[in-house]
Amino acid sequence: MPITTRSVTVDAGQIGRVDLVVRRVTDSSRSQAAGMIDHGCVSINGVRCDSTGKTVAIGDVVAVCYNTDQRYKEKKRSWDDRTFRVVFEDSYLIVVDKSAGTLTVPTENNERNSLVDRVSVYLSHSRGNRDAWVVHRLDRVVSGLLVFGKEEIYAKQLIEQFKHQKPERRYIAIVAGVVSEDEGTFRDHLATGNNLDRYVTAPSKGTEVAVTHYKVLKRMSDTTLVEIRLETGKRNQIRVQFAQAGHPVIGDPRYKKDQATHRHWVRSRIALHANLLSFRHPVTGEPMTFESPVPPAMEKFGKHAG
Image (cartoon, rainbow, N blue to C red; front, side, top):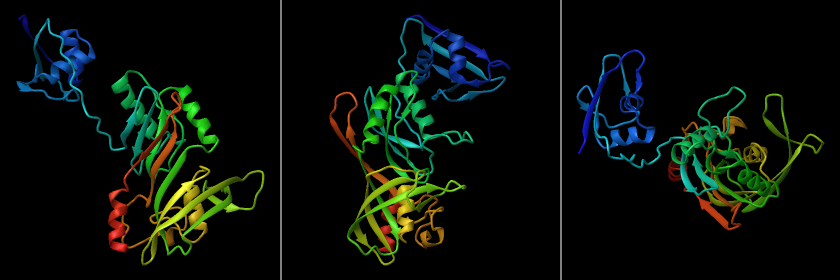
């Protein structure tokens, strides 16, 4: 076999990721260079390199020992991202489970690492140059299920379903106080204040109708576990309406913060999770339903507070 060894001592113009150095030394593609690293062909200062993300500095010696006739295939990697996990994916859409603390989309301050950015990075890594197209959103402090389109046309078709209130969206929440009614519906008009907080007010041209259905799952000593179904999907809807009713979501830093504080809740997130999402596939029309387990923090709280 035509085995070749090529090496280079890194200079000022080559510092950075080792896979870029390998590409230049071997005149190969990105995937071929990654494949060489995966198959143990690359070393840095005599030590085998096992990651494409490793960086090299001035004076490091990068050596590549490889078969010039062999096609080195990059090994499939499981995607590891703290902001989300993939629940479902096909050629048209992707459903993810968002971590609490992650913005769905960038704010006006252009904060980095929003969910749409991270999912786009994932799609580019696994499927070539693709962006995630936003369909709906979750508050930063809320975790749970979201669907993105892989192309604008599919995202628009899903958005139309949301406009007509066709998708089913369910949440699990722990709210302050003991909710007396076994089930009920909030139907309010919401407005936005100068500080961007939302509030319930009288109907007017500038208000939005918000409809939320709930069912009590478990009453605890001073809190209640509820299942929530959205009929509309307005910003902060669940948080505002439960706070207005005297039962703010536990851990909410924005709406009735004093009432939302609890000795057994020490997390920076709030006790609200989007656990079910159901819609029709934008291409096949097939009904699709996805569920996400209750986060450990909420389960643990229930054991302490029950």
